[in-house]
Length: 286
Image (cartoon, rainbow, N blue to C red; front, side, top):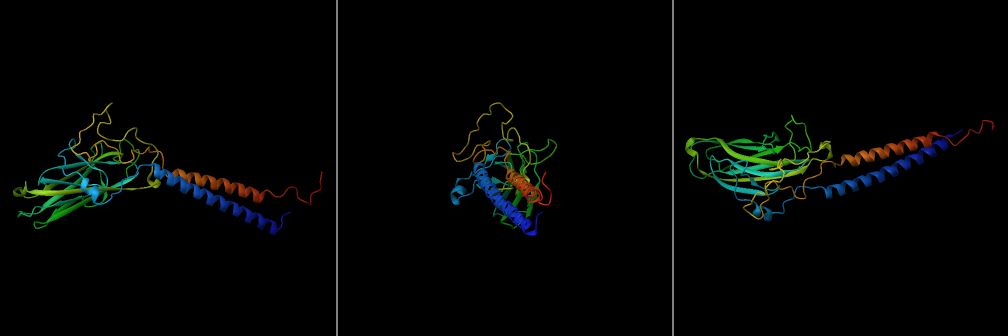
């Protein structure tokens, strides 16, 4: 029969075995997650003034003529008060996109306040709700500029048809004035738009993916290429840097595997602690 010393030694050996296995599993999981992050596309980081200088200097006037921009790229456009300004950018599954806009108002005398609005639409042209941010702001009569922002919900790899969840594909940014005195229409303004994205991680991942991202021409057999006015300007249906993600991988797979390994090791350790050393010594041999 076991004594206290034997049971303590067995428990210590089992605890050491579990601790070593957990450390190895954690190290493997971190390494796998790092490799996955390296293989999966991520939003390109801005390198400073170079990217800013390469941004487009015009904006479209409708969904079909929206000017393509990349994430972390500053786009500018000169326009007249009352114009509808459109840009289009790519957003992939797992990203949380934030759009910031600034309108520099004319220095000439204005006749009253002006209310500006920033709207974001997905590839199906459904207006997307913002988690936070000021999408509508009123500029005072003597204000020099007005700033707006919209932080979108996490882009999901897949969603039900009836939902309005953001899906991978193109996102259209529209900037316009919605209320101002009639006398101020047509005055020159300068608009600036920049979009950035962060990775939401596996906590926001979903099972399933779209057969194709929601981009212009996705429903046709061979979408025709769209000419670009600048060599540095991305195509309207262009994918993010690194291409579209497959949608099936997330770091949830790593932690699921780690949990399975730890559960198996815990079962083995418990069995070794309770199985005993063989036939009890006080029982007669057959």
